Image (cartoon, rainbow, N blue to C red; front, top):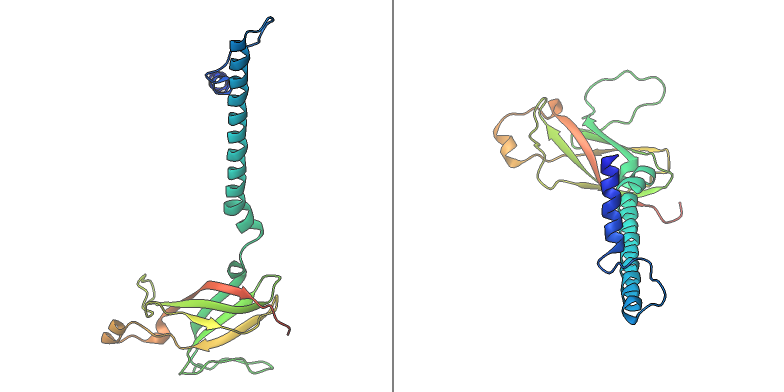
Length: 194
């Protein structure tokens, strides 16, 4: 209660400003009229600043909270994953033969379009790490572009080679034992006809 009362008094003091003279009684002098004009001008400026602050807060809220939550960018609506698949491991198959990679391009990257828009191009990076280690072994600045057109709800699998930093070759590392994490850098919507 006390805090609200203090805030109310503070807000009233700002609203009244340095030119507050209260109610003007008749006969009003020229000085009273000028002071009333200054008081009204002050209140107009305070009101204008309040409207601008509320507008800026609304824009910031839209940009930081509402738009990313309800209208996320396309790259946030694409699920990506990567794993080792050099095509050598035997897997049980039922029906159609599964898509496999090769020793030359042993990292399978899966892109799933979870948006309502058709994806035209995706740039992504793949980070390779040793199990339970945080050091990224992938070559610095490594990224790839996938230009497969991905309709809403569709999944695309591609095989890529993932270059490792030169210092990694100094120690023997079994690339098939590394963990591969993929991340989308950016994506564009397909604007042509299919």
